[in-house]
Length: 81
Image 1: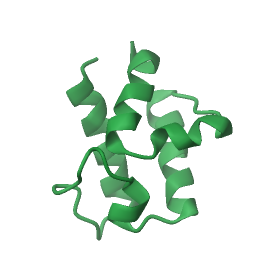
Image 2: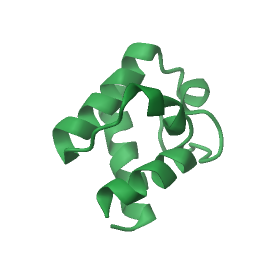
Image 3: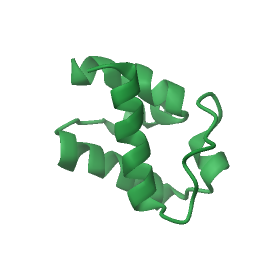
Image 4: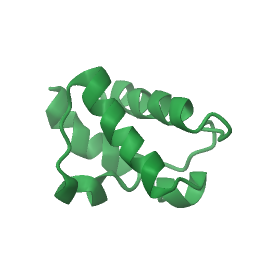
């Protein structure tokens, strides 16, 4: 799976969890929580959707690795390989 595909998977999940937020203007290198005003429950929903939709487990100690869209892609790439 390509980095572009993984990026789109994360964006699709964010769009479902935070439908009022625009995912079109996300800066890949900036914090998702700050850009999209996501709270901790929204973030947990993203992690849960990754598990439910794609069978990807993200241990709690790895949550900081999902801070930006760029870091999400880097972290998730080996899991989708």
